[in-house]
Image (tube, rainbow over all chains, first blue to last red):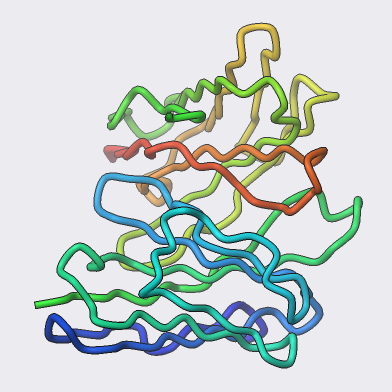
Length: 116
Length: 115
């Protein structure tokens, strides 16, 4: 399977703990995105990488959130000192660069976070 | 500020009939629109897209219509099948502003197709 892969799929953590999610994009895609989705809402943009450079961050991404893509391949999203409001599905997506690709991005299965 | 709106939270249709899902947007800079389908506990799956230079794009049972003057798009599914039951998200992108590929999503419409 060469789709976007996310790990773990589910995470339950106590408030105040740190969590980290990993995303492996489609191999030839140099753009990588993190989105967050809560119940009843559409995915909300968090941040975006082109290769290893983090080019945009949403104001939704508080100081407790940090994302990295050190070698331009996989990415990690860390949430420090988790709060109950962080409970959501965290979605990773990737896309190639180029006019022919339109702006279609391809999502992974998502990582569910529950903060108790 | 909800730039992409799906005003119908749910839609129920009979198998074999047409499903029409609607989406409105406010940002006139959006020039690329997509529909995604999502099953519970899974990530969204790309369904169909349309560029602002077109007013219609068709792919099998799925057709997307774009009315730029009204800032409105719709997804038609015909004939609807029970396997189409899912949440459908409309998304939009402004490819001109640095072309980041960032998508803005609507809230979603839950489609139920009854056998």
